[in-house]
Length: 274
Image 1: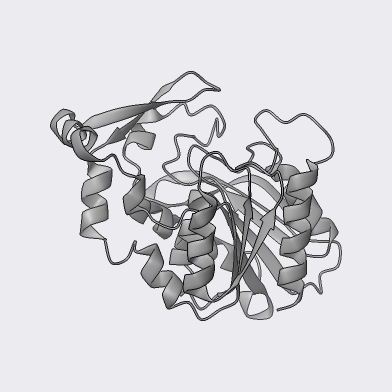
Image 2 (image 1 turned 90 degrees about the vertical axis):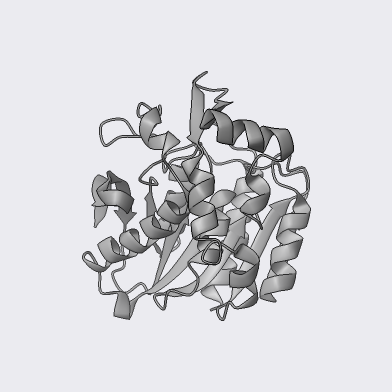
């Protein structure tokens, strides 16, 4: 089974894109569910090559667009729906993952499969928050955040955000000014306990692996060190790897970057050992 650019219904009833591929042998037991990060999407960079890697090594692989990531069913790459992006919130992303698991359950018998989350950057935080779902058997984080609260503006910038109602972040690839409405922070306050990565990590009861590059320019290595401490899991540092493990958008090579390949090998070994 190979399903590309299908749809699922995510948070707030919003439709979004999803892929799922099975390996040649239908006796496989593991499915990787990949969670993209901030300003990301399922086809960013070399994520399609990551899918190919795990499928070729005998695992199912599912990746999807967060429902409010700014993409649409018609265009999942260039953020044509900035209104949806502006209304995104962390609780929506946790809910999206629940809906994706439900969608997967309509395609395969999850009682015969083990779901393993791999989350990149913000997606790693969402994976930790979702680890309590009984369908999830392990969590691997790639260059993950360890706090949601620390991502928000501070001081005068927070005050200005509240007064203006939104702030924008430049997308260097598309040159869009991508807006965040203040409702994102209000939603965080409303769901603060649910969105506490430290609390979730300290209460995790499944195996975890935390992979981080020592040249990460976006998320500090210390955040994965926090996750390692809180979860009691294992941390592996990849030398000279940046935040995206040397992949970029667009990525036109037929082989994934060595640093990303290293992350995939380590993740595969971890999952196979469970």
